[in-house]
Length: 110
Image (tube, rainbow, N blue to C red; front, side):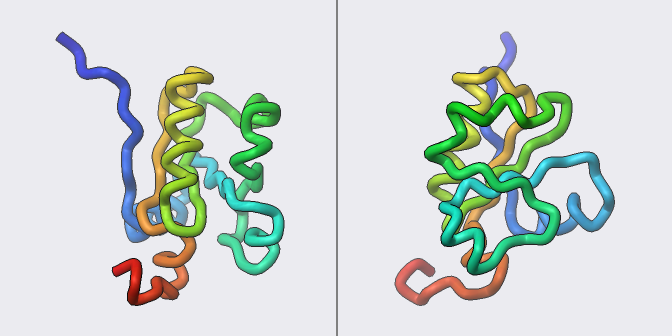
């Protein structure tokens, strides 16, 4: 019996390793335009979570897609949407989001 599809959760270190190794991935930032404008990882694709339903077809389904948000909740929602509603086969969510990526996790979230 095969396991059902699940969204993989990656640490920031795992995402950085994939990115720096030149892996054929899409880093998908699903934060708002304002959040993205404040800071983002170079080379990311920006499609806000609200726009994802109408714009997901812009993404290459043959690549691993790693969803990123501020803390990891919206990216998990986006990854689940892409996997279960849209049929993208290889979708991950970055745990901790941009807050962890940039080392700015507030003490109340640790």
